[in-house]
Every structure is written in structure tokens, then in C-alpha cells.
Length: 364
Image (cartoon, one colour):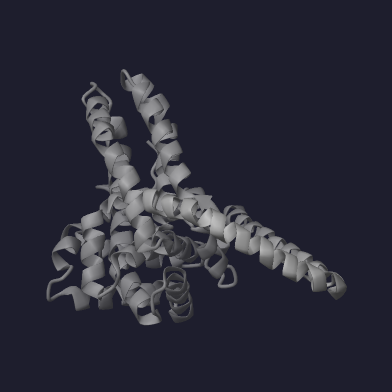
């Protein structure tokens, strides 16, 4: 099975662990989740750049060799007396690998994207560094870790890293050079975000032009239109008010779940429908292997929604949770049924566990 470092790291950072990280750093949980969703691919992009530099791969090897038990000890150190040492050592690793300028630029971009201060985002990066390096170290297993192996590993992850970069975050890193190692994959991600911004700007300009043309209508028309409109408004007010009161009493307004041009409600329901279809077609190991790309696609879709949670208001989060919570019991039954099929768990359990964790973020 092909390795996806971003997915492996996000699977390790369970919702409970993210909550503990947020509590340790004194941050909002949702903002922390958003920051981690940007920081993980951002760190991997930066490390890919280091591997491409003369002598850089060996520096990564030296740093990774120091993280033999980083993943095992990480959970124990969160909230414990050693957490300051964890952050400090992680920050030193990043400084030695990325350099002070790039480390500061990455922390600034993460902070701006997730609504955190520079200091908080810097501490978060320091805390995540051992996890990222430990995951890289773990991929070698019992094999010898050398410069060629680590260069090959990071080079194979370019598309995965670029795909995981949130669009707005990719733009914030556009002028730093941290994405240069990803080549065309990073340019595609940044261009997509730029296109969205250009479309938004064009729409706003069109609306402004329309308003200016409307304002140019001769004032003479207004002299007799204003009294007429006032009369019409009064009639509408008196005749429509009883109906309006009934509507307000019978149907409370439901907050929109559209963020950044994405209808989150529709994205979630469509993703769950696709997920059920994919899981329903699994009857043996062969069909499980065939369904894996679709499950990974759904995982990416849900991950995209998770990355936008920090932009939702508490009311919107409540609506989303109310939508997702009823879907989870039958989904969990379907997950368990599929994993019980002989030969399927070895293929799909990591992906299904990641889906459970990502969906769980939507229920709170």
C-alpha cells in the first residue's frame, strides 16, 4: 500500500490528542485543529525542500535518528512537566533544518491562517516537529536510514503534500520558497486558490459597477417614486406582518453552512453517500482493494471540511453536529461489518480509522 505521510501523521493526531494539545497551549480546540491541518503539510513541504539541498538529506537523517521513540513518548509528554522541553527541542530541530527565516515564515502563515498569534503557532510547530520526524523515522522500520532513502520518501510525497495544503494557506506560503520543492503540484494548489480569489474579486467589482450605474439614474424620477414606494412599503408591512410572525414562530432561521464558497452541508452528505456506496460494495479482499481509492477520496473530502471548522460560528457548528450525529451509528456498523470480512482489515483499517476520526470532529 502506498505511503501517505500526511494521512499517517493526522491519524496519529487523534481528536483527543488535538484537544490535549489545544489545552496545553491554551488555545481554542477548533483553531488548533485548523492550524494542525495546515502545519502538517507545511512542515513536510519545508522538509522536502531541505532534502533537495546539498547535505540537507543527511541533516534530516541525523534529526530523524534522534526520534526513535518520539511517537511513543509524545502522548505522555503533552500536559506533563516535560512539555516545555518537547516544544523547545522541536523548535531547535526546525531551526536547524529550515533555518530561522523559514521557520518564522511558516509559523506566521499558520498563525494567520488559523487565527493564532505568532508565538502560539511557533509553539505548535515545535510540538509537531517530533511527530513529523518520528513518522518519517517510523517508515524505515528496521531498515537503515540513509540520505537516499529519506530523499526518495519525501520526493514520493509531493502530490500528497500539495493535495493536503489548504488553498488559503498555500497562498500565504507562496512567496516564502517553502513550497518550491513541490514543483508543479504546489503551483496547481496555489493557482486554484488564486482563481477563487479572482472570481470573488470580479464578482465584487461587477456588483460595484452595477451600483454606480444605478446611482446615476436621474434624480427627477426619485421625486415621485419615493412617496409611491413609501405607500407600497406601508401596505406590505401591514399585510405581511401577521404571516411573517407565523413563519418566525414556526421555523427558526438555520445558519448557512457555506464557507469559502463550499457548501459544507452538501459536501458532508455527498461524501457520506459515496462512503456508504463504496463500503456496501465490499464483499472480499479484492473488492476492498478496489474500493480503497474511493475511500481515500472521501477521506480527502471530509478532511477539507475539517479544515474549515475554524471558520464556522458556534451556531453553525451546532447545526453541522446535528446533521452528522444521526449518520454515525449506521456508518460505524457498516465500518465494523466491512472490517470483519476476511482479508479486508489489513487493507482498509488505517483508512477507516482515519475516516472515523475525521467524522468525529464534525460531531462536536
